[in-house]
Image (spheres, helix red, strand yellow):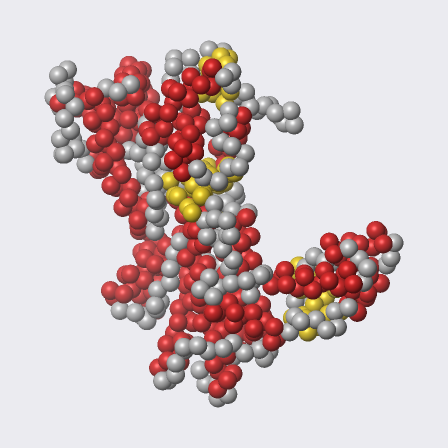
Length: 588
Ligand code: ARG
């Protein structure tokens, strides 16, 4: 369906033209004076100079030509030159009924679906997940779902950090502890016993130990670097250990992400890019894109229009080792070959923006990625604790994802148990669902690039701009609908009636925005706009609810209209939280 804003703008454009003005002035916005009107156009002010006329005269001319408008009930020229508009109640009801009949709720899916890769999650194998990874997973999952909702073919790739120095550290520590393992013997043939020489618990203990030892002991650090090098050059025993590390960690990661409702289509990682590196480097050297600078192989990415210096993209260190940029370029080769994406969206800490700028420019310059493929970096800020420093758990250690979720769910459980609307078993399940909304909404309601404070108390509150408040609203609607049905009435195909009063119309005017909000959120990769929308929508619903007798309404047509509006409101809220990656319980 066309966005309602566009439909109004169309009528307005015709009126501007009929009055002899350019239609480019017919821009419509939401009213910033909701007490006076619902929509407004400021085009008369914008056009005043060009036409050497007082804005109010232009506004009057345009308004004169809108007297038989399809969609507007009221339109007025107001000094100095605003055009204030109110929609016809029938028009709005009609629009909502069309939304109700559409399985996509009036959202126009992309006519030419694109293949979109979303690179998110980015966990580093065998290293603990930190809050940055939590944000990457939450935001990336939302972007993936949003792109899918818009009708694109989307591949979510976790892009594991699975090829670095942490592997060498683990191998070194393991070798010292268990030198008799077959993988460390000269005659190791590459057989791969099913049983890993460690559990996930073991790995979690080995890595930090090895990491801190390497910081104090230079010989140990050199050994770990050497082990990393040997692994990367194909040492059989080390490769076998690496596979064990991968198996054990990936199983654990899958569990973690599953508990967050985060699902990847591809479990690829930095290691998958390695096979592409030698040929890539060879070509870039031959074709003159890469040159030696201070011993390292680099690609210049500075552009004339730059106002500051952009250092070159380094693709090989003087000792022959490859770097983060090398891997990302090689991964682009693999992605272009295998999926031919038209858009790739990367999620990572915003402090990586220079890295992505260098990689994107290098990829374009060298033809690895054609102009027709859009490369985007969505950098996010830090999740801080109440003290304003990067978030830590109660004990002060780095965050363990399970722990963090556990704390929130426990808090939710307390509140839900207090309410006593559900029995003990259900309370546990419900606490999980509501807890998830607290974590995700708490994150997503902020602009991604901003730092935010992770505040368990605020995020788990049933009131205010929180996930639980949104769910509470949905649950309230569900409960009304259940009671309506319990009166022996059917929900079936009810029709929304033209609004009767202020609050009802306000609610309708919120529901109507759905397609616009989703489209804008995707164009701008701005999930916080969906949060802001459902907060407004939930508020509009609750105001309507508090003022309206729905279940005791005696006028049957009126009541049916209310119920139909509730059903649609619920569907819109549910569609939005589905994009955000959480769901509502039956009761809470
Ligand atoms: N593993 C990286 C980190 O922990 C994030 C990876 C982001 N994706 C990428 N293609 N570089 O920071």
